[in-house]
Image (cartoon, rainbow, N blue to C red; front, side, top):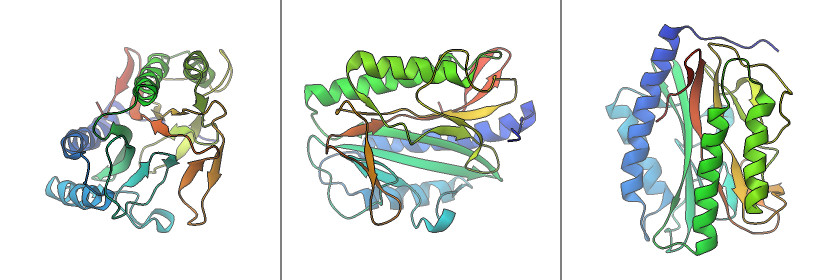
Amino acid sequence: MEISLKSKEEIGYMREAGRILAACHREISGMIAPGVTPLAIDAFVEEYLAKHGATPEQKGYRGFPFATCASVNDTVCHGFPNNIPLSEGDVVTIDMVVNKDGWLADSGWSYGVGALSKPLQKLMLRTEQAMYAGIAEAQVGNTIGDIGYVIERAARKGRFGVVKPLVGHGIGKQIHEPPDVPSYGRRGEGIQLVEGMVITVEPIFTLGSTGAVLWNDDGWSIQTADGTCGVQFEHTLAVTKEGPMILTN
């Protein structure tokens, strides 16, 4: 397994892709409301990226037909955008990979639609906090296991499930590069982090405590086995001597 290390210049290219992606997410956050459809959000993303000289990398990736993944409630990952309007109390995760001049950035974000129940509010808050705790561990000399350890510990504290089959990953000119970055692990285990690694940290927590998931017949979308809601927060970051540099902030 060969890990591609990026130069400061290459990280700068990825940061530009990440800047466009983050700005797009800010626009999406203002669109989320009851009655809006995931397909409308997908169409907006296509248009926004085109205006900014970027393209949606996952469109056409292994046959995936959309610019975004839109996962609602118990669909936790790789959901197809559809024409079903979002409803008050839903949670929707919009995940996208932006290509700018051949370099990629990846970020998924969960949004509440209108007023959320208290358990869902807590799930959203704790999952986002766990992502940032994992990112803080992305220091030169630490290991992949250190990142997973703090994320898993946060889930256990909140009595949430961790979706273990879905992991973060390296990224650069390809969506998925080595290494895998699981949201579970043990301190000191796994690959050691070195300067120039660019990875995603992307915990998915569920209200159900098992985190067990099922793959749907479409070959892409993944749902919780117990029907509870799941949420995801994801940033792309570079490992630097000064500490983790979030590229999709």
